[in-house]
Amino acid sequence: MLNANALKRATDTHGPAPSAVQGSEFGRDLVQALVQRPRAISPKYFYDAEGSRLFDRICELPEYYPTRTEVAILRERAGEIAALAGPRAEIVEFGAGSCTKVRLLLDALERPARYLPIDISAEHLAAAAAVLRRDYAGLEVHPVAADYTQRLLLPAATPGAGRRVGFFPGSTLGNFSPEEALQFLRMAARVLRGGALLLGADLVKDPALLHAAYNDAQGVTAAFNLNLLARANRELGADFALDQFAHAAFYNAPLQRIEMHLVSRRAQRIALGGECHEMAEGETLHTENSHKFTVEGLRALAVKAGFRPGAAWADARRLFSVHWLHAPDASNDEKERR
Ligand code: AVJ
Image 1 (tube, rainbow, N blue to C red):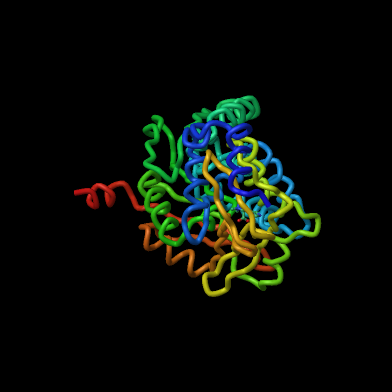
Image 2: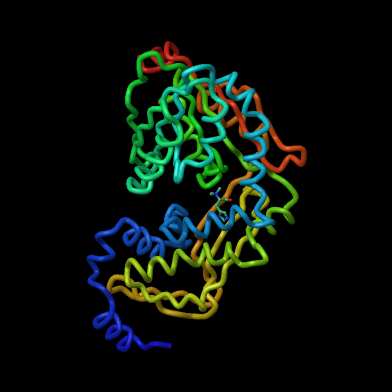
């Protein structure tokens, strides 16, 4: 193990300036994560280029049912969804990424007017938007580079446009705490007033199935989890020894969520931005919560946020659900603001 002097020398000679850490949101949040108890960081930091690649591989794993189940539900219900959305709909996608799932909707909708993909990564978004413009002539694509968990301003509806339909697939809602989920849904109700939200939510089920989905045999989920530390080494000059951390994922039944952690395999020190952090053997950095829902629980949460639940679709095995939630109408919203 390094003594304090050796560690100091190591950070002096090899570590980047502390400003590399302080100058990045990831750096500041990682320092905070290591200082606080319990140690925890937002799962949004999984998704650098490497993490996004690993997540795409997770979606292909035999044990990881959410993606293929949701896609199957959307395919099967595309006609019903298109009828609910109506002609000239405007799709607003929260966390659009590479904009692939929305194709299922765009292919079924009657002359969709406009697509507003929202994502934090401006470059990624611009590239994805260009591909969609090429494939869907007549569709206006208007990317919005923003963090949709913060204050969100969207362009006004285009003249002649139909309903505004929010799209939040993948059970990304499950990454939020219950309070954050409510806050997100309230924001969505506001920007979608007069329209609706199409939402994907993973369902509560046999914990053995959940456990398998987050502990795959090929170890892709473990690599995805550990990439957080690899990313810190790449971007922030941290010195995490990746082989000294273990992937842990388990179902917390009372809180209805999968938790992912990185467990320190031994007592160790981590140098980050000129500071030294200690972790004892068995201590963890909590990297993700993935909440699971019942259909009724999700609908009750939506009501609390101001939506009126419409259809709820699930697959035959009831692994995953997709919800049509009517947003409050515009006149109601005017009354609420007064
Ligand atoms: C993208 C948040 C829906 O919680 O299942 C997959 C992320 N984490 N395997 C999920 C994830 C580990 C995923 N979400």
